[in-house]
Structures are given as C-alpha cells and as structure tokens.
View 1 (spheres, rainbow, N blue to C red):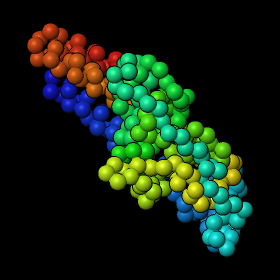
View 2: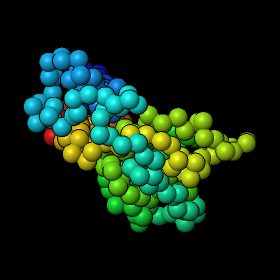
View 3: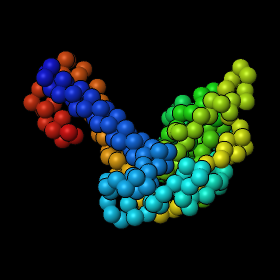
View 4: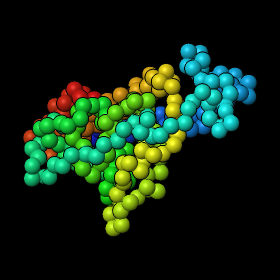
Length: 251
C-alpha cells in the first residue's frame, strides 16, 4: 500500500517540477526576444543564428539609437494590451460550476457563469499586485483583478509574460490596501513588437502552456484518486490489487 501511494505522490511531484521547468523555459524565451532583444543583438554582432530560420528572419539586423530593435516603434501599454477591471461577484451570489473565479491571488472558487472567454490573462488590482494568471478556459474575473480585454498588438500568451515584466508595485495608488489604477499602467512606454514575432512566440510557447495544463489536470486527478483510495485501503473496503488497477487507469 505504501509503495502505491508513494508512486502517486512521486508522479504529482514530478508534474510540479516539470511545470516549473516549462514556465522557466517560456519566461527565458520571452526575456530573450522582448526584453534583452537577443536575436537582434546577435545579428548586430554577427553571431550565428540560434533560432529556426523562419523565426530568425523576422528580427531586425540592428538596434536603433534607443537600444531597441530597429523598426520597433515606441508606444503605450494600452496600444499593446487593454486592461479592464473585473466584475463584482460576492460569495453569496455564487453557485459552484464549471468556470473559475479569478481574484487578485488567483482562482477563488467557481461559478456557473463566465464573463470572459478563454484563453485569457488576469492580474491583481487590489490587495495583491503583480500576480499574473493565464486562464485556459472561460472565466469570471473578480473586481479585485484586472483582465486583458483587448490584445491590439499582443496575444494571451504574449500578454501573460509581458505583464510579469512590469513593476506594478510602483503604480500602487492605495494606502492601507495596495491598489492599481489601470489608467496609470496604460501610460507605460515600451517597444511595440511586430505581430509576426508575437505569433512566432505563440507558436513556440503555447505548446509549453498546454503541457502545463495537461500536467495540472493529471495532478488533480491523481490527488483525488490518492485521497479516495487511502481511507478505503486502510479500512479494507477495497483490496490493494483493485487499487492498483484504479491507479493504472488514471496514470
């Protein structure tokens, strides 16, 4: 019995570590392309290509006087993504359902209705600033969050990593409770990336996020299976052999 349950715990831990690695890989790619401008710097220094040819060709050959890729104009954050305050939904008005409710700290229960179609991106607006969430499914963003309403020069995948690079704490307009004013954030000045490069980033990184989602769902099923089997094994309600078959069915 101990070996069976340990096997479930090991797989859950493996999924957790794998998801951390996938997240780190995606962040590293974003930082290289959109923060450090690695491909353009490599081209300017005549270093060999390190991306697929069709992606490499999308990046400019040199940096401009503002130390950004030549041809990437400066613009406001609102030109790239448009943030919107979430919606009121007191706990007394919720009914458990299929759609996650997103607060400033992340998932805060479920509801039978969604306000936003997934995939989407939300971040903390009140209480907790800077936590950013990629939501694969339709969802309900609470009024303690900001969600990305429009992606004029971005995408859900790109916006998720872009927001993580912003210092939202510096825009705190609250006193006792940290609060974010979207209009202040919208005024941030930054390079606007051509849509072709944003799409190439999506093509590379979206599979990583989908694998994360697969691992999360598998972990949830494994944890539920473990928690269901343990008391039944201890009480003798089911035999070890039957429990092993149940684990094989979900592993």
